[in-house]
Length: 219
Image (cartoon, one colour):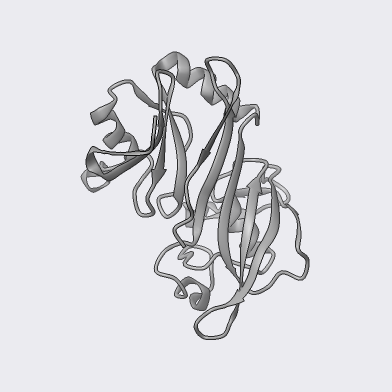
């Protein structure tokens, strides 16, 4: 299916009998939250058009980009297993504060919930779960104020909550616009979180051939 815009301003990247893919805008929940004011979500909007749509994974509300939904319970099981078994390749783009010294590397820091400050997560070498992010510099530049900024390609090998945001903050390069983890100057440097799920490749549940999905980075 060619890219299309379906009701409620959802940009559909792919649709077939097994799965759906969308380019989620920043500021839209992936699934409904608690309370009447948090019922609007990508999943809710998709259900209005595809009644068999089922959630497989999520993006943070502040993150934009590729998100996949299954069609029906059996496809939800198959696709959820592909994510759980790390047979899905995900790549993100982010603009961070400062210039990393190297051109790429790995961030291998265990993560866990910061219980008194939920939904915040934190580096927790004792109780945290193993978490691995691979990163590479795409570009080095400056903000309007002359401050150094870097555009990074990010590959989360694991899929912990807020993993990319916490890992980058932990190495001293918080993502711009991150109201949860960045210090005030970096948090205020962008009108939104500058984190985008740019591409996702998964084995199609029908024949296991790689399905490559891409959403152009909006920043």
